[in-house]
Amino acid sequence: MQKSVWKAHLALFIVNALYGAGHILAKGVMPAFLTPTTFIFFRILGATLLFWFIKIFFLPKERIQKKDIGLFMLCALFGVTINQLFFFHGLSLSSSINSGIIMTTNPILVTIIAYFLLKDKITSTKVIGIILGATGAILLSLAGNTGKGDSTLGDLFLFINAASYAVYLVIAKPLMQRYSPFTVITYVFTFGLFYMLIYPPTYIETLQIDFNAITATIWVKIGYIVVGVTFFTYLLTMYGLKYVGPSIASAYIYTQPVLVMGFAFLFSLIGLADDYTNTITFEKVGYMAMIFVGVWITAYYSKKQ
Image 1 (cartoon, rainbow, N blue to C red):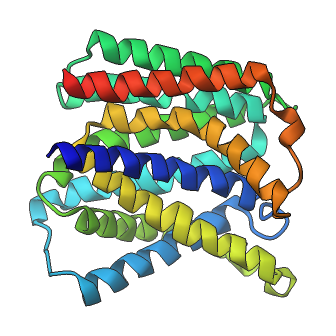
Image 2: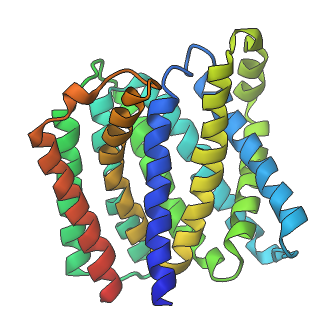
């Protein structure tokens, strides 16, 4: 069991690494080639097809019980449809500094929701780790302010996204105790695709896409978002939730600002992105250290207690 727990932590770190790379590689796809809604539709459609392909041809059959269908639909609504729609639309309206700050509320929201729904105990070490990590993430966002144009509506969308994903992390935990991670995520995405198919803007905006204008490089970036940032991240998150609590899983969001900077440096060296290395300062490195210490306290000592 101890080995599985550490594998779960590794899986959650990889999830955020994939997200970090995705922030850099997906730059330029929206809104020049795809709108937020169409991008999300492609993500959910592609990931759903991949999940069902593997489930049908490579894994033993596992059916879900009728009594759990409602919970699966709730997980899809909060974990796939609402959080992705509000994040992409919120980010397109608000500034980068606001999105960085608002996203750090996710672990706090998870802890509060888990306390009421799952009766998770809020330990002193968990509070310390969350506060330390959130402080580092907020200071890092403030130090890395590169965007202007505040939007109250955009900020509200980003907060709804963070709250929605927090609910998903909490309510998905009971399903992980009854089904395999792959079964859970397959049905969650299936219901999420259903929601997108009944969402009218999906059809309207998809029909307006100029597919001839999408270059091979853009298709590669879209493919990475579908396979890496959607397929693998949700699968690894489900695996992590099987062995650690939702509060610990959400604490890894603090590593994303650090990972984004790391990938920005790497991709600039190999010519996949513009050079942002001049934005990395000793001040930001100090804030990164706070983030890692906060995640370590939350993950290690909370697990120990």
